[in-house]
Image 1 (spheres, rainbow, N blue to C red):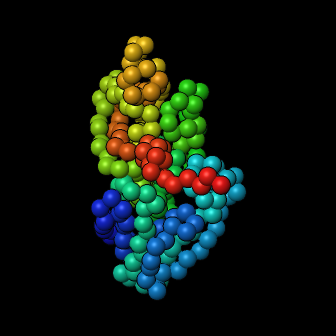
Image 2 (spheres, rainbow, N blue to C red; image 1 turned 90 degrees about the vertical axis):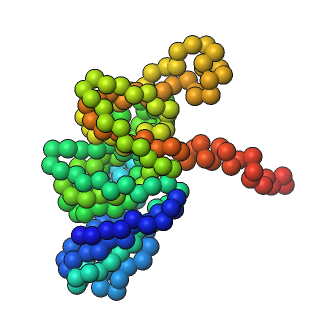
Amino acid sequence: MKYEIFGDMLPAVEIELDANESIYTQSGGMTWMSESVSMETNIKGGFMKGLGRAFSGDSLFMATYTAQQPSSKITVSSTFPGTILPVEINEGKSYICQKGAFLCAQPTVDLQAVFTKTFGGGVFGGEGFILQKLSGCGLVFVELDGSVRRIDLAPGEKIKVDTGNVALFEESVSYNIETVKGFKNILFGGEGLFLTTLTGPGSVWLQTMTVANLASRLVPFLPYNNK
């Protein structure tokens, strides 16, 4: 399998498949493809697993695309301005990503919904109670908001992140929420009441923008119907 990610802040990934190679996406994820690529729609993993995916921001049904001849191509586009990140998953290593981050993957990659381990993380973490877990073996593409920075944390090393800017992290990384200290910091600091704390070991990917923040900036410029 070969791939090329193109585009700036509205990227897409073009994947070249050999004969009988496949990828799967959420329903409606394909943008264009070669005539030699076939499509099969199903509830990958069964109804309960599909229902979990739906709660985590993807569709109940998944579409599997299979090349019928060599050098067949399929293009999958992001749904929001940001970054498409390729992640190579090996046996024994899993990743947790924000809700709705999954774009497409090889069939050997497993996508499932997971719940945050703490009540505070679900209510105040910005990502919500339900996240997405990527495991198995193979290549997966995720779509993240804005630009992305990878940070490798040593065992016990911590980083504090504004809620919602945590895009992806290895499952070995501990995820928790803490309250911003200081009355003036809470009122005037502009960071809100809570921060996400990530503790190593493991790698984390942080995004520079969130959908919620972008939407809030656009609200003053939207026309209102006063009827």
